[in-house]
Image 1 (cartoon, helix red, strand yellow):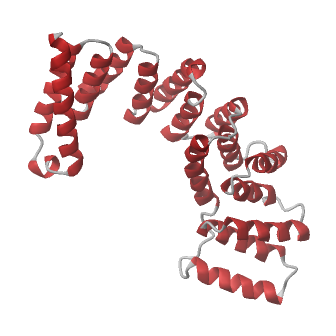
Image 2 (cartoon, one colour; image 1 turned 90 degrees about the horizontal axis):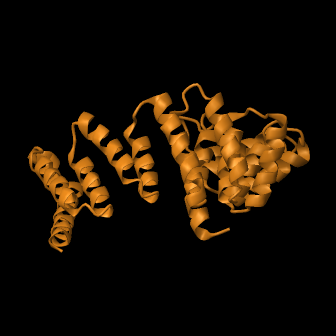
Image 3 (tube, helix red, strand yellow; image 1 turned 90 degrees about the vertical axis):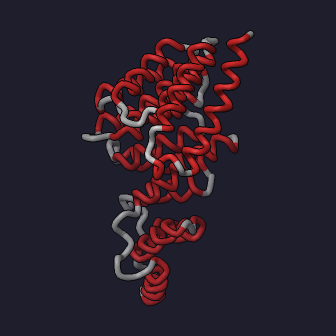
Length: 285
């Protein structure tokens, strides 16, 4: 397991934990107060599995993963067949980077709950971090099929998982993104990832067609003109890139001062001027 893969998946696992604990945290008291209350309750009734589970979930919410795992061990000792025990075990283990154990636990959960969406999502991410792309892909596909409104994020996660596998997965990643665009519409985030795939494939005309479609419909064009220039420069079309960078600078100059005079736009302007100089130099050669 590489650090790069772990760094990619752990933010997703944190997001999964936030989804799993939704509804547990009281609106009227802090999580720490709840943990103290649960600890007192456990001391009074140490055989109540539900109290250990509630405290484990609070610990997960705070990122106290080892403490959560200890509580989950107690839950399993008291109620081995609790319907969510393996799900929470998997989450805690994944966040502790014990990914093989996490995969085993989520497999056990899904064996009994094969269409549990949060379980499928967690296994897709854990499997991705283990580079078990066939399992991860199957779970993402099933999750998208089960979701009435899957959202762009699932399509993007699936594509990123495939892209991490290298060039042999690029076509499949692009196909999945096109499926998302067909189902959800031409969402810029989906198109951006699709453009990135096509740039990796050096499919310059196809990438430019996507950029042009967004340029046509977008009210903010400076970023898309910049991207178009980047693709043209990569493909060896320096003269075309010059025109695109000039259009990007023009669009930037036409923004109201309140939108233009912000760090992101100042950085974009500086970058555009540097790339314009680079393209101009290449066009002269």
